[in-house]
Length: 160
Image 1 (spheres, rainbow, N blue to C red):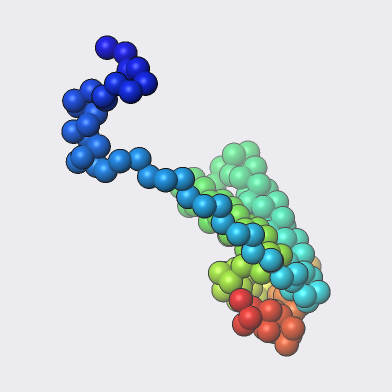
Image 2 (cartoon, rainbow, N blue to C red; image 1 turned 30 degrees about the horizontal axis):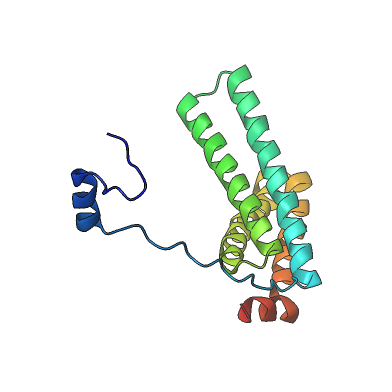
């Protein structure tokens, strides 16, 4: 049965409209919000976080290559290490984009990951004998935490 203009809708359709309600009016378009520009300290912090995310992604790739090409003691542990380093790289990359956009959620994950990277850098520089990894990592962590602690960065997130 075809519907013609002026013809009544089929009985099942009318029953469904009574049960579920008729079609809603289209929503009004949202007004565009003005996004405040991030201060220079936050932009620099986003760049440092992006650099760290790229480095973590490279480490995850390197660990994956080592896992595939060598014979690790435990393949599942080696793959788990690849997964969590890759996850931290993705999280830090997303948080770097969030910092650039002044998203309120982005500061917490960045600070948390900086604390983890700082612990790894300290262990690398003092216990493991990998000063070539630990010292640059500690410098990046200190730079990131300093940039996020500047008054202009704190005010930018406070105003949001």
